[in-house]
Amino acid sequence: MRKVAKAVKARTRKVTKVTKAMKSAKDSTMPKALTAMKARKINPRKVKVARGRYRRSMVFQGKRERTGGGMKKEDFYVNKKGRVVSKKRSAVASKMLWPRAVRQARTELGFAGFFPLGGKSVEGRAFLEKAKSVHAQFKRERHDTKREQSNDKEAVVQDKAKAVSAPYKAEESNDKAEQSCAKVEQ
Image (tube, rainbow, N blue to C red; front, side, top):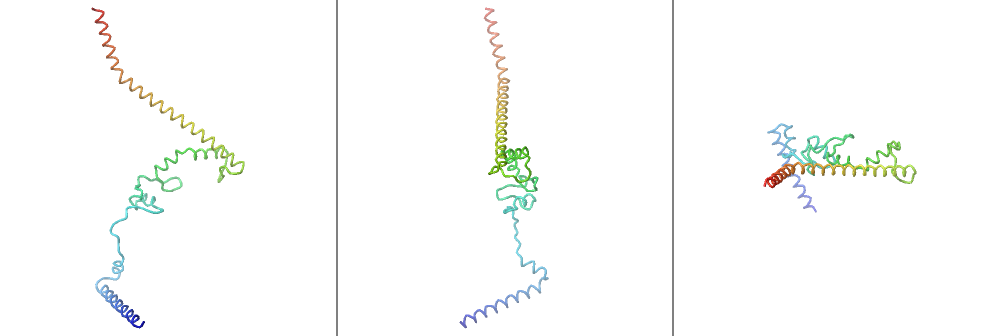
């Protein structure tokens, strides 16, 4: 036990002597402000990938280049609430029919603030039924517009086909007319 204690004391003495020598060398060669700065190690390469909770806002502010998923500053914008959100995800969400239907049903029924959709109350069930009917109406409208767009595209394709084939048909009719004239002359 005594031998171990002596070894520990000897080791601590050596360490203190070495640190004192280093301090005296620093004090003699450099000012004190620089010695404090030297102690800190600075990472030479800048972090480019933003991670964590505020990754989008860091990229949007320009503190980082991109997020872990590869999204850059051009992919974000600030929404009405002031949050930094993805442009593509926001566009997809704005096209969703169910949230639009619930908002419209809420305004039509005159609800303000929090009001549960469905549940055991009569008003909640009426709210759910109204939202479902508005949602079905939105679906029908979307289906009709898609059908109109497809009909318009088919009409454009048919018009193009007629325009392309019209000169050929004119040449064929001229050839047939010439052949019939030749037969009549004979």
